[in-house]
Length: 138
Picture 1 (cartoon, rainbow, N blue to C red):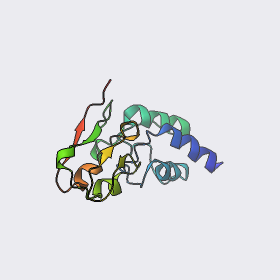
Picture 2 (picture 1 turned 30 degrees about the horizontal axis):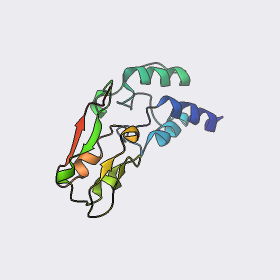
Picture 3 (picture 1 turned 135 degrees about the vertical axis):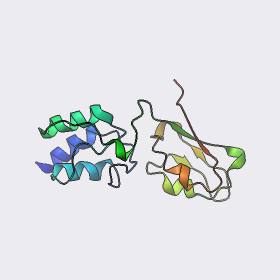
Picture 4 (picture 1 turned 90 degrees about the vertical axis):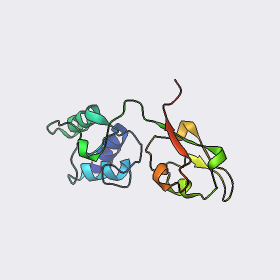
């Protein structure tokens, strides 16, 4: 029963893998909820609608997401690397939980836009501040 519940909970989560919930990604958070170790309000990217959907599936009282964990954006930002400033350190690649950044040491890196979840974890990892967050193209 729990693996199926974990899978269903994981499908409701936004798959940003941002860690704002306190877990290493969406799947570990889903596992914790399935085992009764985490509440439904820990996912800022999912917002209030996500928290309600999780509560409904778990048949528990709905509550808004915990604003102290982060902010909810209807459209998550997209990370872009300012190519002229990139030194090829690979720290952004290591920080990206969804492998949306590619490149090689001492060479410019780039973001694979369809894979970027907007988690923002690459931004503080960059020592030369060459990563900017932009609204995705419509």
